Amino acid sequence: QIYYSNEVSKAQLALTFHLPEKEDVRLQIFTTMGQVVADNILPDVLNQTYYFDLANQASGIYLFRLQIDNQVSTTKVFIGQ
Image 1: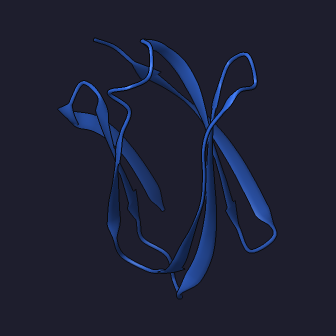
Image 2: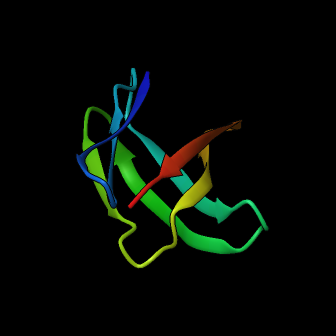
């Protein structure tokens, strides 16, 4: 299970993982125009929360693309001021 939350602050997003076993996770964040905001490998993820500061980004919708093993999922996240 993966949980998204931007309740920490308006520009900080919390991404919490609850995976059955340790996995490397590739996280990519895109604007709706396709611009890459972040492209990270998160090593040995199991039950952790990662925080991403998007204060330097404009308000709007961002696409979070996660690749865990051979599975890919994409979620839209709205970041407001």
